[in-house]
Amino acid sequence: MNKPRTLLLVIVAAIAAGAIFFLVREHQELQRLRAENAALRQELADARAALEELERLRRQNAALSTRAGDPNELARLRADSAALRKLRADLEKQTTATVAARATNTPPAAPPPLTAKGTAQLKPGESFVTGGWLMEDGKRGFALVTPTLVNGTDGQPTVMMESKLFAIPEVALAEVGLDLMVADGRNADNHGVTDGAATRSLLQRLGKIQGVDVLSAPSIATQPGRDATIQLGDANGGLNLRLQPKIGANGQGFDLDFDLGLTLSNGAKK
Image (cartoon, rainbow, N blue to C red; front, side):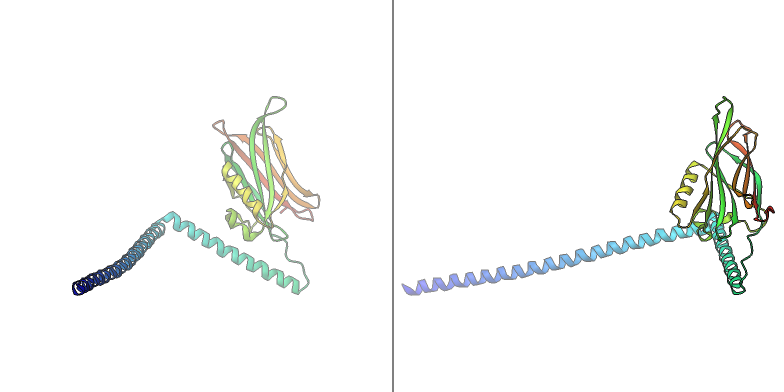
């Protein structure tokens, strides 16, 4: 009676051991497959990232190739490079002159003479800027004027001109787009015209630059075809800007004649 029971127990134990061995092998195989699956997923993610980086580099290369072939972009880059070289040369000259003057205990030479005269054709809402003269502290001075047609107190058409005279450090001219309006000789007949959005952007950028000085911000009114004058300084020297707004040929906007002059402390006109 004991032998069959013992034999049965041995068989059951063998079957259980086999089942356990099979389950252990299945678990190990499952773990191996999971590890291989994770590795394959990581390789796939790395491959996708490499493809995305390759596509980004391809688009960047295409964009650079397009810009390199754009004559307008090349012209702008060349103009910027020339302006930077000129600015560097001017700064080196000013530094050399200042050092030499200090070494000999003589004051630096006075800024070069300057006048600006011309006509700015403005559409409604546009402004004009002129100047670029060198000031004694090394900054550059500019005048910004925005004319608007209104009805005067007598019912006659009146041109109201909001103006701003400001000085900006020379190193910051390119930051606000005024680096091409530097005046180094007697004449500064070049001027710029900006629309309302560009004018607001210019004023906002000027407000964020350290060293910008607002010299004056007068509002003057005159009738179309008549002169109005902005003065800064006194009899010993200053700035005189004559303005004469005329209604544009199409009945809109203005033809704004301007005549700017600087006066030396000895009374001679720059």
